[in-house]
Length: 442
Ligand code: SAH
Ligand code: SF4
Image (cartoon, rainbow, N blue to C red; front, side, top):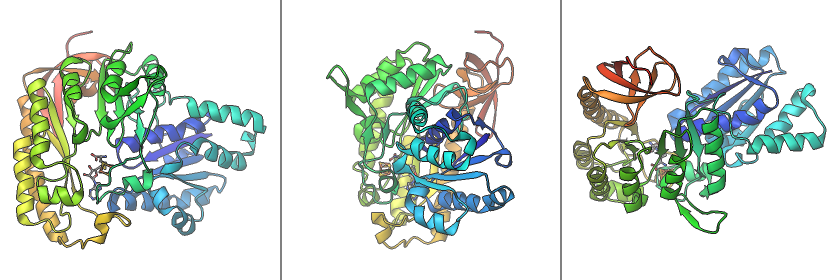
């Protein structure tokens, strides 16, 4: 039996894709790259912007033929859009076998097993052994050796919290993923240990406001995010730790010190700012001002000068004026992010801002996005060019391809050995990737 997982959306969604594959792989399925070769497909959807949702829905539409060719095949639609549109998806695409929303991720192994058992007679087992296997699958971390929906066995995502307690007015995430829940210190550490033992060298801690994580450990002591970061960094085999997405509110002295003191912490902070206008930030309910955000970044840069920053920005939020947009450009000039994900505001049904008139015209959104992108591309280009002629430490993720500690992609070809740290001399750039030469064995 063959399984194909398609993931849309963010890194948290990609990590979920791995978790969604686990119980199916545990039933003896083998992962395949092409959907047409699969007996079961999991479509892990995203709904953060309309465009992301549309892409997933159109893929469900295209899978109609795949399903018609052999009705014995299983199509599972999961994730954030499945949470938002569950009954509608079932009605609109009746050939979908199972719709399971993001909030049900903890129950997912059981729900999926029931569908598979009903569908594939060969897999039907006694209730007792099913319970054992399902709970084993639930607790077993996805082996980094068989990453599904993830590109490298060397970089292992570890979800440390689910959901979000913030209520940014444009954002659907709290609606589809629910309130925050933190995984325990022990659970996170055992997943890290298992992944490191299986070959992961870089751990990517994931959560919507990842640095808000805290939990009381088995010894009764409260652990905060930086305690977890330090513990993960000191695990055998872990060469690097990254985390995403931090929220500025939780960037405190402890985190700034950890960046400076813990060598395994990558020199890279991806921290969404969304806008440079305090008026718009207020309407978005982001809980910081542009100056407050920049102040945290400059404290961080003072403590750890090598840090490279990247960010997310939305243009065309309801009522955003030319002046507000100029503030965003100004912020970008001062922040100088090495890269930025830029988005046109997309109203999401059920969010607070969807009640405001989406009054910035498509034309203006496009024009603002183009100006912002030109500025960000220039900064990205300059950051890449500055590295030409330098030597950088790269973790080989994929055989001659990997990332620097500060988050740049590097391609050098040979020698290739996934999992190894390499010193690469940067000789040029291609698109957003550094090209280099590596002549040492380590
Ligand atoms: N939890 C993260 C962001 C998760 S969503 C944080 O708060 O930092 C990922 C990105 O999608 C956001 O940073 C934002 O830039 C973008 N985004 C979210 N909702 C959007 C919407 N309705 N329209 C346009 N972009 C949106
Ligand atoms: Fe959405 Fe805001 Fe939560 Fe990020 S912090 S997931 S943008 S509500």
